[in-house]
Length: 344
Image (tube, rainbow, N blue to C red; front, side, top):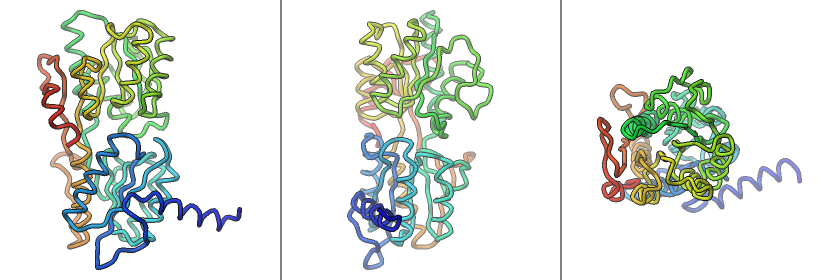
């Protein structure tokens, strides 16, 4: 197959993947907005797409959505941006699979006059995008770390910590949650921009999960082989937490280990209610995407770009600690509240 034929096939495949129909242009002066998520299978990104579709309906914008094949798939996102530039999009909302690797493509989009907003995960550097709409991921990690510290201090148990991260790429969301959790628990993280350089003897180790149940299960199995006495498990998200729980249950250790996580999706909050997850930090992807589409529509109308939350380098869309075992000094809501507000 020649290079030109392969390129044509790639464009056709991308158009078929577009979530709101194909076509290279919009009619009647419609504002075309692109949504490019890490995957289209993770419920977090499904909810994000739902929010973008709702906002497209209320603003009169046209939405085209694309996704990587799996966490870490940068090339598919690069191809999606190229397609959206060619289609005449006014803006792109992206949850980057590679915070650094996607920057040249984002630069190209901005040079072509598109507004680029990162959702959930900042680019590196953050100002490579026009704006970021996101959870304060460090704060999300800090909350579950503080909760775990208070919980362990109250019980008198010794912590042996397993950390189930996202990927070897150390994207910003992964680093911020991991480091926030450790700092909240009272661990010296040394270089705050890196995962895994701590020397605290309470840490059994780190492994990666791809943010998926099967990855969480395998990572938990690996770390249990390293130390079967693990008592505290941090996970990058709730699908990974579900997989970790399966591994712990298979080893007969599910009652001896506290799991903390980040997401606040309806299934994850259900796992808090059922005692599978001790506490989780709830974020709001539907709101992120709604705000993103609205921002692109405003930009298309009058050129206005979003302003950051006061004191922060991004637009903070909020985070809430969800637990049915409240800890002194750590503000939280219970699982009933969490289920009413999951991913709204």
